[in-house]
Image 1: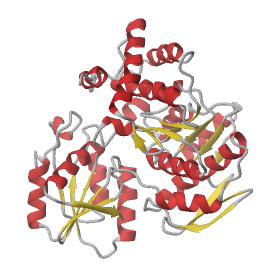
Image 2: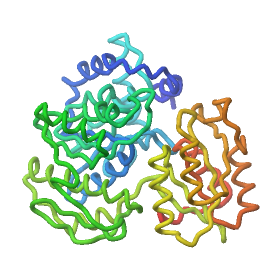
Image 3: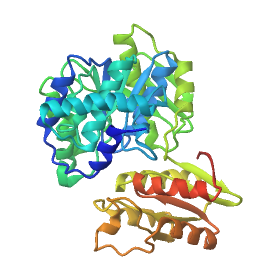
Image 4: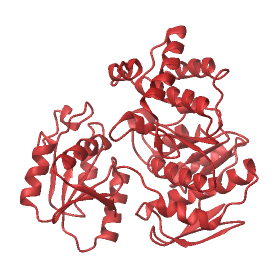
Length: 419
């Protein structure tokens, strides 16, 4: 079967990321009249976007809504990026929506990047299928991201940290300015607690007339991911476990809870059900986040932490849940990441850290200044599995973890659970 849209994406996998927002604006202006979106919410932030999206999707589904989600990047296949109620888009629907995107590009004489094209494909698919609400995860930044063309009723900004500084700015104030640009006057704007520099940007944005409901002020949460509770001015959620482990997930879950509460009340005339919410939060899962794979006595944990803040959260979680476990780490980073800082943080977990290249254009082996222990992921995994009695942690990039999964499947490892 011919797949012209998928072929287009493959040819544009590494197209120049030039942030020409006018291209996205032209596409959105052309698509909007005939492809109106349902209620939509845009989620930005440095870390936690995917987890917050997953928590929110689970919460809204638990209240009887059909929820469309657009996330990125994907772990194993591009169809993961577009889902309704957790079910991936079918290839024929992917091509059907993609054909509209390609026709629109042709009529406008535009060539979209991979991310732009997939975002608009999701837009068209959601316009056809009309879920009750759509959740769009920002790709990078916010102000110039293609998702910022989506007409929205709400926005979420998770914790802001240092990443993609080449594009977004050298400190959290500059990065926050880029990400806060998704927030709009009159919308439901939910934001995580931020460091002082990022908070300065929040306060300046609020002074322009944009209202925020901020973690620690409008709503609070307590406990760990195995004993999470939440409250705002109207509700108190009793302690419950989260399906995604780690103290950092309590912030993400609280953002999702506040948005679910506000959206259901304002747009669905529906009170949030605390019992349904507790079950939804406990059932939430995300591919590649704290996955445990086993074969006999060998355990391998996968996590897509991809920057220093993400690695710190990962290390903290492993120490919390596995205080007596000896780890060996196999690290695969993208070339543009602060891999030295990531290795330094991992050194607080173990001194057994090995590095490997992986089969992706963004792998750090493209950076000639980096000396790696392995050039092949399978060789690295087999070597560590043969010599390490300890649990192996594979982390550093979603693209690296995507290379690890099929190797584990090939060698008869089984996915057990998130930790």
